[in-house]
Image (tube, rainbow, N blue to C red):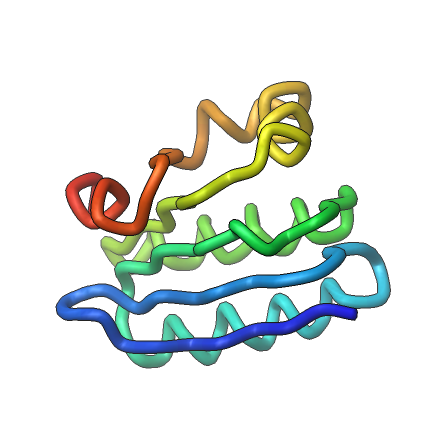
Amino acid sequence: MAGFQVVKDGNAILVKISGEMDAHTAPQLDKALKDASAQGVKLILDVAQMSYIATAALGVLMANHNLLKAKGGKIVIANMQEKIKKVFDTMGFSKVFPVAPSIEEAKKLL
């Protein structure tokens, strides 16, 4: 089961993502990211509680990245587990999205 929490944190919007991100939850992820980007263009995705990510969810991340980039915004990923990092590295997403070990470090990358 997926969960999303969107919170304003200073000049950034923090999106806490939990559970599995797959073809079934990708539309929910897309809605959460669009809701967050309506509040601001600097997003931090806290993925500490994300247990799985599939290509459908990666596509959602990339689409939202492109939308925010066009508006002068940015997405930074924080608290990534090793198994999620392996997927990002394998798919080349680590070259697109800045990754930080903590929310505080992610704020410095915005």
